[in-house]
Length: 347
Image (cartoon, rainbow, N blue to C red; front, side, top):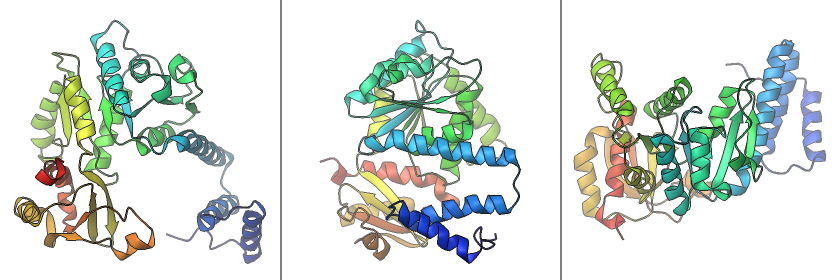
């Protein structure tokens, strides 16, 4: 792929650097320069006006969304997806209100699409102080619901792709409530990102009304048609919890982070950062259970790797390092669940 700055004259690049300096920007200067250079490159490419309008709007929307989320980086967030058409008297509405309230009580913020139906139910359950909204501008949709609007904690998007980015990027858990094309689209995108390893592992709950069969029907379809025809692996759907229990949904979201903290790739090595250091015996047991996930070698305890030290990246946490077989990335969820169940993690 050609370098987007390759055709930009040197004096223009120097002028961009001078502009950055004049603006008083001192951090991430290289990335800011690339953003500006890409804009110049679009002009040099002769991009048509529609392409430039899409680029401008997308960048502006992402900036507004980043600003919305920035004050709340220290709070864990859960995104709740569901239909805008669900009525307040529906059991799904009550179920959503309850799960949002329970997560908010445990210190989580709730992110929604800021519309009516399930989105409003989630915002009502969490309350305005714990709600963030990312709405979409459509000619036939209502304005952002009053809960997220009460504290102006909403950003409106023109494009679905920028909205999807922000509904996923900041969250450490997801709850999908039965809905239509939009809800299913969001749910399948979550699964695709997890299956392909393009997103870090996170808990995904498919929550139904008590006694509901919506997600059970999907589960049967996945097993009979997708697994049955070989287009996905048998364990691809195991990363999802299908339940009609609010308590089980909350336990899945919060329990996923009991011991597991984060991961990072350092070259071909996968580093798993934990909250509690496992014993040597526990590491031996993990190797016995999950040796088939490894490209070679063993799962081992390690001090922070050089790249982590250079970036001051969560240096106080214990960690495990392994060389993961990339074709077994779908089973990474199983390893994380095992880490959360270690005796050393129950303190």
